[in-house]
Length: 114
Image (cartoon, rainbow, N blue to C red; front, side):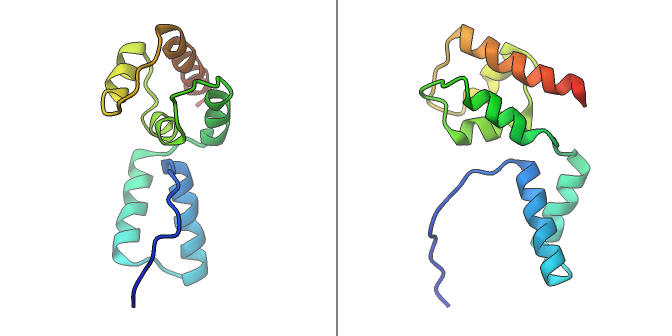
């Protein structure tokens, strides 16, 4: 059986947990790898406000900030500009201090709600 990748879409931990839940409901149980992934997601805890955070950061219209970057920020939830810089080091993207401050403010506003 030859598998073909049709498309790739970045997902955050919350979306992944929801997809695993749908698969578990459909198939009654998960395969080994999916079960381990679900176990890990339960142990780290996932952000239930992921979509709201994504929408707010996306509305900032930061030109070089892509969906994959935002999804990574949701998973890690950097609380300071310094933490945000560390997360973004893995990407070839530079953000202004003003934009970093806006992103951290959004993330912190949701972190306080949890």
